[in-house]
Image (cartoon, rainbow, N blue to C red):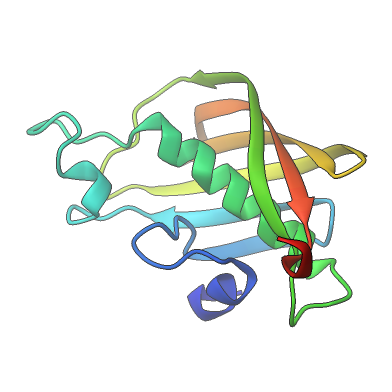
Length: 146
């Protein structure tokens, strides 16, 4: 799945699209979003000037975007994919900083669904070294009802 397909599954547009591609998708179950962070990415500009690191909220957003793509691929209405909104972040830990020039893999795994709420386990890695890990809960609505 390339960046054109990624944006067809998300309501987001640059500069807030935080996934370049999604790989290893098992529709509705798991997948990995991949993002190559660049020196000129806007979110590095004012966050620790001279010592650029990715703000943790963008890691969480990348998990949410990857989760929505994995769920949308499983949707019967691909021309009108569901929209998910971040409802809760649980047990999120950050282990190493994410810097410009790194390619990060955001792997998500579906845990369970309760009504419109969906729980995912999330792990971010750089060269197989854990950067962040936790769980997110999204609430999902069809576009027609939002």
